[in-house]
Length: 195
Image (cartoon, one colour):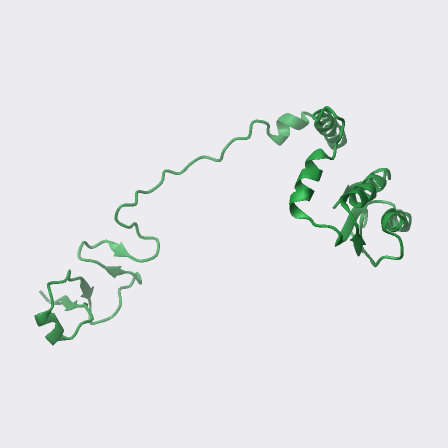
């Protein structure tokens, strides 16, 4: 053989410790002129690569799964209809699923009772169209309930069609004040959504 492959013991223990210690599993690393392998991975005695991405003993590769199919894809929901019609229909379905007492905010109240304690500071964000008039209307919704002037931050959308009005932080005394603000905001037809 023109080129010999040398093997080196890689236990990390001094020679004297190896003589007195119990036998340990020995891993040989194949080296060519004491340089690292070209793949960047070390070889074990089995010749398989070790390291990141290598399979480990006891783990089986998982079969690749196809993307899960939703029961209703967007194309099935739309079927040539306008997005506004679809949203109106979905909102009507959600409204019909309310409790028998007619309280559309029942779920929100349950979650709010677990998460928030009152009095607390809160931000209100409303997104809609209408420019300065919309901003003034949303600020009036918040200030009309909590009283006094509130800090306001306004940002336009990238296309300029909508604005985001952020009012607060303001101190709210109870969840009924928060609901009153939300109801007042929803009465404005220019509102797209609120937080």
